[in-house]
Length: 490
Image (cartoon, rainbow, N blue to C red; front, side, top):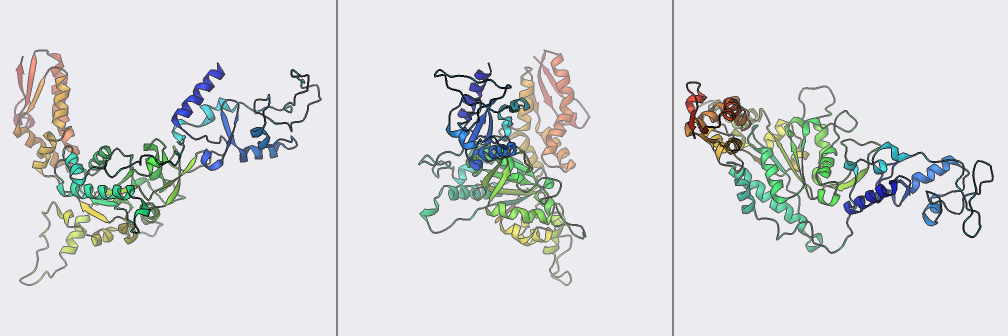
């Protein structure tokens, strides 16, 4: 039975194309070299096996013997094994009557009992690098959609934000043109078009990136900058953002090197002002991310967020990884107002200090100088050349979000009630009332579902009780608590 299970495991590994990983040092086959296999499908590299023999001492064995010679023993020991003359071991004769060389009187523990074949969890397995042949490239310039097609796809899911969608479409298109171009074709080297987006909470920053990655069918890793700290301190190392992308690419290094990393809450790593302590989660993180944004070969752990001796390590080149950084940047409006109000505040041509107080889209006027004043270091900003901001949501945009996107919130609730055979309808006045209440919460489009859920709770609870209910109409009076919903029977 053990042999059958072992065969099934080997077949699975060959199909997936995963590298062997040393059970002791956790280095993959690409770094440690050829592996030795011992019982229970445990793989050990030559270096670790040699150190094991050196520790044992006096056996006369070497990893070369195990790899080059056949043997009746489980580990394939070679001809250098001594013959055992004591009473504790038995000599065996082969068909020609010759003595077989036997293993000394010690045995290996069953490492397979520690769990998992090879003892390596499935999320820490590294896919083998494909042989370098003249195969179809990962991306082909003819297969990459043009900017107007990318924006048209984004329009189906994201309402408004026309300028932001146009900027992202062009930046992504240019980035993957750079990836598909061969360096030897031209003497001109194309730089990466990493992006920095600003926008109030709930305006669609993360949703835009998710939709973009789904359209291009590339690995996407979304990470939070608030958990990043300088190496050596409690928290996630800078390289953990690349480790998450590798996991999203199913541990395929080649596919991960053409993916997208979205670092959210990037404003939280701004330089701390008026502090006497070491800024391990602010300016230090910005400096640590410089090499990733520019493009460098970094060693990242597989299947873990931190480096340790029990986790395999692989090398990932970030020069073709597109980085998109986003954040709400609270109080950035005050920085912009201060810059805009620097003109004279006296005389006939003076500007009023409260001139921009009611401007909801003041983030549209942001400049690199404002971002630097906020606390981002110049080297970091320079590696994010595409700077743009998203519009704040108003009542009309909220209503459009409710009913226009392909997976609109209203359509989701209509689908839920349709499963019970009930038609759900919202009046136009009710939609505006929902949008108005959501705006008062000041958390963006995320508030829409919270508001609707509050009023739909009783309807979704009572409707399945009566099979005669055929239609429910949500009215403004119901939302104002001055009336109830209109219910039509079948």
